[in-house]
Amino acid sequence: MSFEQIITLVVLAGVIAALIHDKIRADIVALAGAAVLLACGAVRPSEVQSAFGSPALITLASLFVIAHAMELSGLLDRLIRAMVRACRKTGATGIWVMIGLCGAGSAFLNNTPIVVMAAPVVRDVANSLKLDARRFLMPLSYVAVLGGCCTLIGTSTNLLVDDMARTSGQAPFTIFEITPVGLAVALAGGLYLMLFSGHLLESSPRIDGPDPAEVARHHVSHVDIAGDAIGDPRDFAEDHRFDLTKALASVGVFIGVVALAAFNLIPIAAAAFAGAVLLILVRVIRPEEAYGGLRPEILLLIAGMVVLGIALEETGLASSATDWLVKSVDGFGPLMALVLLYGGTLLLTELLSNATVAVLVTPLAVALAESMGVSPRPFLVAVMIAGSAAFATPFGYQTNVLVYQMAGYRYMDFVKVGLPLNLVTWIVAVAAIYWFFPF
Image 1 (spheres, rainbow, N blue to C red):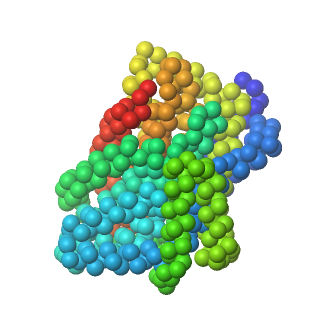
Image 2 (cartoon, one colour):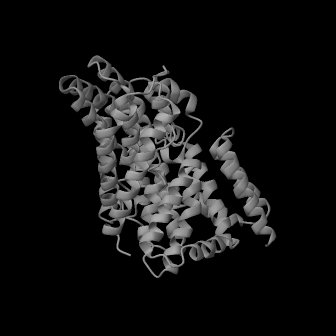
Image 3 (cartoon, rainbow, N blue to C red):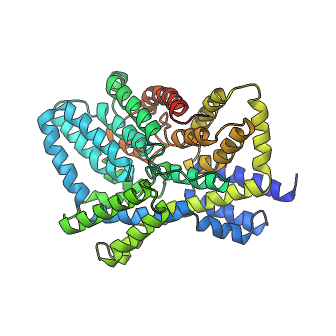
């Protein structure tokens, strides 16, 4: 084993251990790992530079600005107030409709501020109807996560997998390419939550906790990459004055970006970048506000993890791991290999940052498919879905932390509801991938 391989393994182990220990910010951990790899020669400066200029980072940074402009316009505050009035008239059905709308919004916007705003509404409406708010708050978090699985831009995990796949020579994903699979998983997960989550939580004692806006202030520095953090959750602790002109402009630009990418007129990174700059030029958002919405901790986390992925590829460790994986599934067909890959990704996502999982598993997924002589597409989609749809702990996702603190859930509540949800979404995801993405 070469010196570069040893250094890369040590850095990988150190990054994973630090992320699990969770005492140092994830972006600092990733950047420290990248710095060690660069200093020791495991990666070259040009490779580090390419990581910081990847399409995934450009897309995310631009979407951060566009979404932040929508937030500051007061549009989301206005929508929440409208949903409050509707829920008070329609009862529990209205609450479930509101949860579904939050999931739909999460396909295009960050789920963290959506949950921060919606959770107090769900709680207060449920209490006013003399319903147990815990029946709805955990499903709110889970549905927001599932919504992010429905589009390429719904979660930064999807963008990162797409970016890593391009590095491995694969064609880029379109914005709605994974929507059939993500929608099937979201519908199945939502149906399970409506039918069973209330019964599973009935016998659990309640532990009182703080509001999610307060929790967001304390957890803003701990960002799970799957949570995306498009916009600062602290921005949602107070209402923004509604500005119709700015709201229409930001929504119009966002729709334009999605349309340009959906019809493959220009790449998503170029469309998003142009949209963000346009909002600044027409003064919908001031430059200092745009910089404030960039979320550098997310961008730097992704860049650092991409550097680690490059090191694994360049030192030959990725190919060695691929050889081991291919031998492990020797004799299995592509479908069984897909099932095992999804399960392995799901397990890793419960333990590690989603960025770490995307960097580690995406090259393996491509190599595994190529070794079996089948399309890598189904395996990449499996990594995207499993990289986000992990529900068995309250700490694997920022929105879970918010409702965990607010509703007084116990740790085992997430195991009781989330573990079956993992199994349901695993089965549905594999079946949908098999149907929509032929080997």
